[in-house]
Length: 321
Image (cartoon, rainbow, N blue to C red; front, side, top):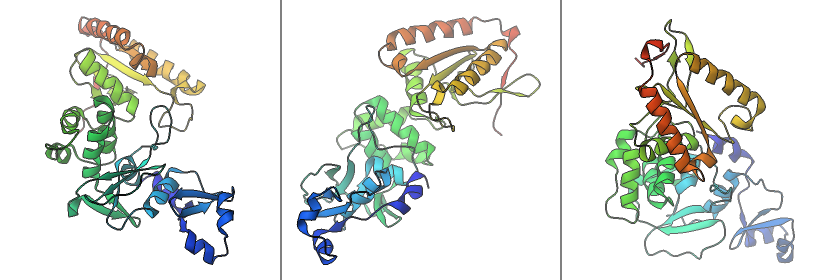
């Protein structure tokens, strides 16, 4: 299912003060570093793991029986590649959905939201009540701070196994954030391998005004041998777009900034260029601070690609059967 089930075995379920008292833990001891307060009246040992799964388990312990874990935490349990942090690397609160009319005092680490959930919108996985993947995706798209981040989250849900057809059929209408969610659903695409790729794709489509690129296609030479798999590829322009992120799906923790990975990227870029493919690279700053400049740079590269001498092309796109 994902990282949650790799972590959950080492988590500790929070205990109520009355239970701890029965174990001989005095009330004054709970104020020492030996214990951590997870929510009102619930504690875990001070050396409990600081994992994403622990945060979710701790929030679930404070949840009423008819509540449900939602948002990014439900997506994480379901296998989506999220880490429970915002773009500034700050921990996000765990979303807990409560039935209308039920109130809970807000506590650090938990964001209570009131919402009516249909029976099919609540699943139980690993003993946790969660919003279903489809309901989770719609909620994330409605709650996201921007359209771009909504699309990023939906692309991650598609990668985790949600089908584009079911997502399209679930477009919300009468709820807060519905307009943004509908726009995000229309822009979401399966095949993205990272949030950076999604953000680069949106720049290409929305800022540059180009058609949807292929996502992580396999490029072959004219003899059918593998050449490269760029993040994004505009087949008409022979243009490959590569996102250089601080994280990468391989085993190198520094991602594209890792020296060995950077060397490999350079070799791959040279291989593509020898086959008449234009390559443009972008990183997080290019998509933020230098966004306009990046869009202009990519637009110029696309024009070069459209006017290239196609007789020099030494590549084809492998089509899935």
